[in-house]
Length: 403
Ligand SMILES: *Cc1c(COP(=O)(O)O)cnc(C)c1O
Image: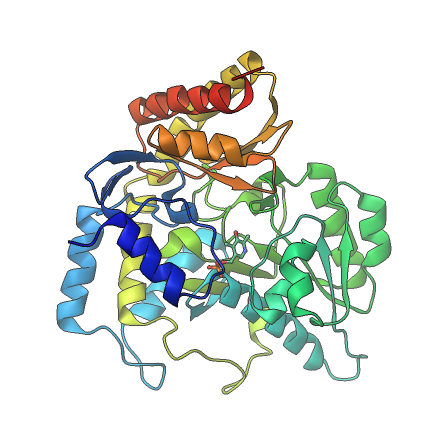
């Protein structure tokens, strides 16, 4: 029998060492629970970084993807299959953005947005080329060279320099700096309406208005990176709409495949008109397996109103988190919406994350001091109550013991 120690030793010897994993080996899941190799249960409030949107081992998803596997999994983009058009139609109905490109990750979706923002301007006859991007401080857009170039944190960037040139970063609460940065040389402004990896930071309405104004006045395109905040995560289909943002391009990922890798870049007709056959592509992108998973997710989200459930239980979670903040001075601030929350601590968050793991609760740390929660959309109020108790115990254990 392979033990957890064997699994970890094998990885240590043979995998590129780029992950700092919690020392637990998961074998099975059900809903919001994960089970390790010894059968110990964990309450999962991170859901594979916001990916397992329908919960683990969701029976409808399992049935849909196994039925699809028995029919056809992959044909490449050399030919047609019935599911890409169907998925794009559903995404258009939800987002108001009529055209989709399917890929395999959030970073690839961002990459497609950056490329077609550039292509849009290259296709405008008689105008000087516009190639610059304006991004916000604390942004995270992915780890490919392009998406990394608009990612703010130097920890991610520095090892791989030089990156794509002509990117300017602006503080996320400085409308004047934004106005100065966006010019007639800017191809696009890229924003996460609610930043995730950067510490769960919502954009202010004032900043969103400044972005809208700057884009209107200069013609710069707006890319909304809704990879984490989109598709019901915040209790509404897209967080852009909460801020009154109307993007020209949108990046999606994470929750979309409910565990099967798929990303999508969405376009207005005006931007999509610049695309030509051969411009871009993906071998796997939008294959039948990924599209079937995404269609199953959207059926649950919209037809069965999972987005309404997220809004409701999200309110319950927020109340519980605010109560914890009242009682625990180490918690400086609670930020987020729906089922996307960060607890900003007055100290490093990792000891809280470790203490939670010891108690059978899965959360993660982001931006050094923030404990992040991204539970599955199917979480119940009873599971939230259970998680809140464990989380508060972990905060107490990590911040108040010995003091
Ligand atoms: C996770 C994330 C990405 C990158 O997605 P991958 O699937 O890891 O490539 C991009 N943008 C945002 C906002 C994200 O949260």
